[in-house]
Length: 250
Image 1: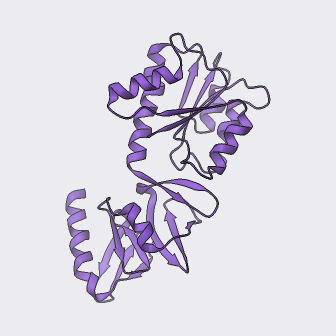
Image 2: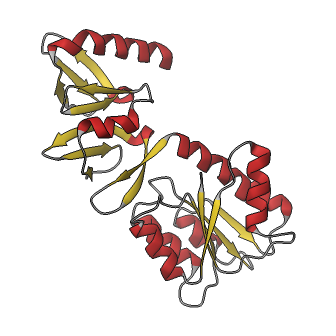
Image 3: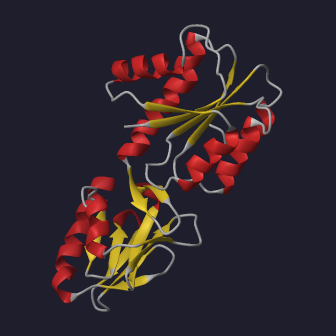
């Protein structure tokens, strides 16, 4: 189920945000999102960043002209925290277009003029709901060292075991996410996606990022040059999986 965070009184020409997302979700064939309202932008940002017990928000809808901080600054904080990289979408609502350029520079997914017309609601909010739903189907929530994070499957290159932790390496990120669990526990989040292959007890790879399988060396090479040792018992199975995946990809 999608979760939406709302900050500020967002004006619609007809109805309100809760009514729109509920109606749109029913028509689109997915479960109606939960809408959580925040009185202050500071509380919204804290809830998005900390997320200690609940899944991160999929969409943040925020007014631009807030008393203590602009909606653009809210988007900037979320962007700097890496939440937009994790699939969070930000939609800003404003009385005019004066914030539009700054909003675009901070990676917002939508910019709406108030009061929001039914047509603009369908075009911007509706499209972002559909995209967020697709992201939720192609991702998982992991309890990382710092907080709960949504991790998009497409971005995972490989996972390696380090002591009691699993290090989740993602495309475009220099530092891995640290997840406190076993390799088996983490693989349970990924195994329904046929791209992921568990290489022994120490590695999980995404076959989208496999460059080659070196049978003589007993390793699989990932894009970027990393070579991961493959146990003898898994080599044939890995080759078959990579070949099958490549055929499907083509």
